[in-house]
Length: 442
Image (cartoon, rainbow, N blue to C red; front, side, top):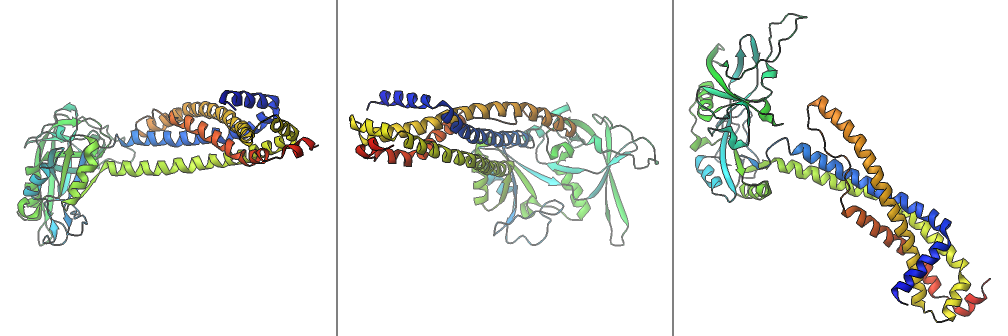
């Protein structure tokens, strides 16, 4: 039997039993629609999460730390030039020579050491004070980190500092009386602020040292730790740490506490990170977190798709039942077809085609229903998530439910295959009928 003759017969036979085919196809519509909308929801959530994650840090940066011989990270609890816990003889240190090795790696465009201020400190501006993280960086321009200035410059000098976008909001007047209105955040750009660091001598007496810095720049909001940090030149922080710890810091011997490696392209980040780990250092990047989130959402897609597939399985049982009943009703018709020359293969193809047709019709309806419901849910979810983002100061989402082009195609093909598979046993029964007995069937 030619293909187009078979197709015409399948359409004619399905059209003869519109009500039964329609009711059976509704089950497939529910199953395929559930698969489309649930998987689309999982994909949309993944895309939304990636949009949020891609705003919390530069994905081309790798954070490198010294490590023990076994690969365990050695990170000083309060930062500084390797002044952590334990000895250094069994460690892979981030010395200046090690930094040269890191700079020699392919795709690396910058290797910048970074140190924390180890001393207890307080930052003052007029009557306001705050406590926040202070970093010394081995570069003269924070643009090397991908940071941008909202006010002023990103360049550092010995007498200036650059602050994050939210540092000013942390300034408070600790002398306020109960009921007094707190002052608004100050505009710190181009203002002089005072940094006081202190330590204790052997008798427990407090010793203080004061510094005055001009705020040369305020960074644009980056959605990362940079928003709450203050940046100084590395040598300035080194001097402060030496005073606070009563020791000389030699980076060639003790190494840096942390080094940031910047890669030319985020696509190369994981490759360079693996090379750094192979060198004996501890390294991580924001892409590790993004990758973990993507793995979670991929599992979620499979789980939600499986939930929808359960409904499709129930629909498959309905197709098998419909085809079995159809064969009983058309037994004499099958006998007549065989009597006039139809082969077992022709009968098998006809009934498999009808079962696949039911699956295709239901799949087509399910794809349309799932897509329409997804668009409706997308509008409602985006409005809700945008309100949440506005309240929390986050990035508003651009999508909540997303249906990629491959999903409807896959679901339509899968529902057609399920329909054909469900009709396999009834079709085999029809194909193996003996013509004489089929013609005598009442």
